[in-house]
Image 1 (cartoon, rainbow over the protein chains, first blue to last red):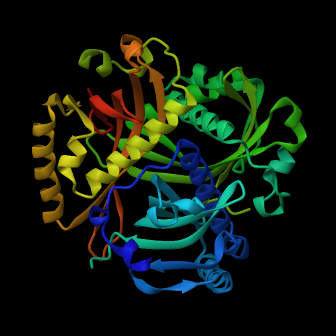
Image 2 (cartoon, each protein chain N blue to C red; image 1 turned 180 degrees about the vertical axis):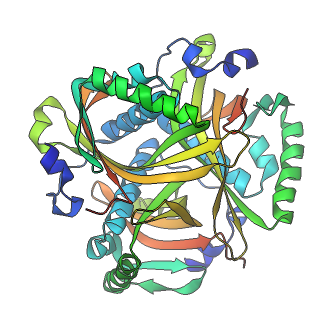
Image 3 (cartoon, one colour; image 1 turned 45 degrees about the horizontal axis):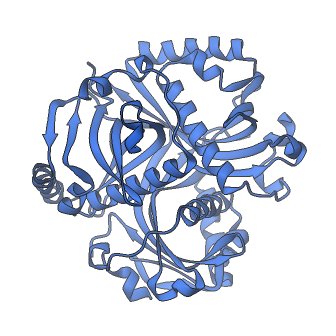
Length: 159
Length: 159
Length: 159
């Protein structure tokens, strides 16, 4: 799965777009998930991944796997940002959602979106910090979703 | 109501997410509302609040109440921005919408979202100016919504 | 059509908002379209316009017309950005969608949204480059849309 996702989008075969209902519920899920992160709720954030969910980045391609590991790493990361006196906001946009050919029978979808990070110091001006593109594999969970696999491409990282 | 909204989100009890239909119509409403603001239509913007709607910020917690007051203050504010030669755009994102426990029978919802301000001077470069988080209480109005209460948390303001 | 679109929004007559289904599918269409652009797929991007679709800007009001012309110009533009070593992302937001009075029987809609450009150099920091407002006329095409007319207002361009 990792190898497939790391391919540039132009080499992926065209896929079936998600239904409007899937598009809207994925958008709502991702918005709520990013708010958990920015509120510093590392364990609640990790619980939005599957039990063995993967979080990988092109700057660290081996990835992290499993809720316990993700929560521990994010807890650390949240502390680093707070120690630097910053309020961090993750913004996502340009979401597109497609049926996942390999997991269509389980209702699995692929989401692709842009993400930027906006940092604000105390009494300071907001600043744009980072621009990325994210590729998610999402599995249905009740009325919402869980992240099975997330791969983040950093715009300042050239392969 | 003000006191409840000023609580940090982590201390709020978990709530029932809005339906997809509510999520979409709140998003459309907020987008249109911000366009009115940026188009300098202060009276039309104020009319998107309830008659006694409240606009409060952590930098000015006493708040403003009522369409006439909101329109007058926004008219002034629009003039200040224009006098500085800026084109101002309010962007919102990361919207989440929940049923409002205290007003579920009237169809009332709570919306939480991020907002940034992008300013552009004549012949100049666009710049990010401000990052905030907004908590709204919205009441249904025909096919759309009215703002009963808005509370804006500034990221550069530490309590 | 160009003249009407170039009018400031305050002078346009109030219109009927799009249905929630139209709003969602326009949003998904525009997100996918911007991704094509940022992925450098100029021909695929041009194919999201009607055969004689127009792309106009207040900085170049005569506009460009037709898929072949649009593809050729965008191919050139993508090359310029790449030669400068930048990764460019178009973000859109604050979308509102209305029925098009003049083309309601064909299901035509008007979309208005903000767009910003985020550029990232290799190993560098992301930066906000440009803020605009876009006015689209969209025609239905199967489950999705085609752009019949796009007019971009640059925030740093004063009429």
